[in-house]
Each structure stands twice: as C-alpha cells, then as structure tokens.
Length: 278
Ligand code: NAP
Image (cartoon, rainbow, N blue to C red; front, side):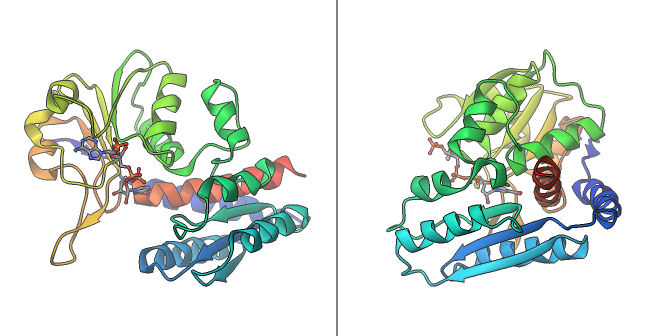
C-alpha cells in the first residue's frame, strides 16, 4: 500500500514555525485579498485564507466588490495597494467576472507584492529558470510535500496532466527546474494512459475523475490536485484512490493532500515578500 502524503500534517508544522517567526517581527506582514462577486467557492477559499493568516499573526484584509465592478476601478485599487507601504502582499481571487480582463488585473499587481507569483515578471523569472519573488502556491506546496517525504525529483519522468497557469504550467517548469524529465498532458493529448504509465511522478490537475489505477506505473508517486464534487456533494480528486494506492508508492489524498499545502505556501509567500521588503 502506498504511503499517504499527508498535507495537513506538513501544513500544521509550517504554520507553527511561521507563527513563531512572525511573533518576532516588530511590524507584521499584511495580506490584502481582493474578491469580486459572490462565487460561493471563492468566498470559502478567501475566508479560509483570511482565517489562516490571522491565526499566525499576519494582518489580513478582504476587499470585496460586487460582480458588476468596472475593470478600471479594480485596477486603481490595486495601484493604491501597490503604493501603500503597510500592504506587503496582494492576492486577487480568481476567477473574475467575464467583463474583467484577468491579464490586465494581474499585470497591475506590483511583482514585489504578488503573493501568488502570477505576474508576468514572476512568471518570466520562473520560466527562465531564475528565482521569482515567490513561486505559485500550489506547485510550491507540491514540491514541499515531495521534499518532506524525501522523494527524489532529478532524473525522474514527471507527467503533469493539466496546463493551467495556476497549477499545471508552473508545476511543469518547477519540476524541470529540479531536473525532472517532464511531459505535459492536456485535453488534446492522445493516449493519456500510455503516457501516465511511464510516469515516475504523476501530477494530475484537471478537475475530473480521469486517472484510474491501471493508468499508473508500479511504485510511482501520485499527486492529486483536482477537486470536484459529485451529485451528492462529496469531494473527489482526479485519481481513483483505492486501486491507485495499491500500485503507487506514495499518493496524496483528496482532501488532506495538496489543498492544505496550497494554503501553507500562501502563508510562506506572504512572509517571504514581507522579509524581502524589509
Ligand atoms: P483548469 O484551468 O480548468 O485546467 C484544467 C486542465 O485540465 C486544462 O489544462 C485542460 O486542458 C486539462 N484537461 C481537461 N480535460 C482533460 C482530459 N480529459 N485529459 C487531459 N487533460 C485535460 O483548472 P486548474 O485551475 O488547473 O485546476 C485543476 C483542478 O485542480 C481543479 O479541480 C481545481 O479545483 C483544482 N485545484 C486545486 C487546488 C488545491 O489547492 N488543491 C489548487 C488549484 C486548483 P486544456 O488546457 O487543453 O483545456
């Protein structure tokens, strides 16, 4: 049976260390989260981020706009936050309403306050193999989890399913930067199972139940990023857990794997940006 990659346990350890560190700071980091509209999932994510930040001593503020806000009002607010010395980290909760350009909004965030690592400056640094101010939270959390369990990355064949800018795309580059041989799969990929069968490390970030046990190589490491609810409201990942855990050597559960590591990374990034600006 595979060893469970326990994201909650590592998150708790990271948060205890961060709380201790923040308690020594004379001034505290301040994270401002911008939320637009009433998407229930986004409201829950933002609430969780704020609660977690406050618990460890980060000052956290949520700026909530209605879904009909104009793009320039949002961008002006970001400029104001960029110029506010007390604000050390800015996060715009995605998705945004269709009439607002995500690209324009993300571009407006000062790279030194870009806690998600999504601005062109930070993305560009990442993709040129240089150090951005911070790395995107979900892939960063996944690498921390692999490192915690002593899983080697260099020389391994890593298959990343999904190529979003939030997870799959930066994940593939971060694995490449750690000397994995990386294959990226997406909705146009043919013979997905043939490719996943060759993965030493499989990261699935799709949001559909697409990875079956028979698609895995014996002894592989499985990272399940996907989250979706079935008709009864039960949470699932991309990976069929029971059969996969009999074939893999390590597997991350849903919930309790990547999700908690994403929030731990957000807190780490908030503190890193604060320390960079000291
Ligand atoms: P996204 O933007 O919807 O991207 C999904 C990706 O999956 C796309 O690249 C898409 O390919 C690919 N895809 C769709 N159907 C496929 C198929 N049949 N075979 C292979 N690839 C396929 O989603 P996301 O933001 O990356 O999130 C992915 C999942 O992770 C979601 O369930 C989300 O809720 C979850 N998530 C979890 C966390 C966490 O902290 N646990 C964080 C972020 C996201 P194309 O590019 O060709 O369309």
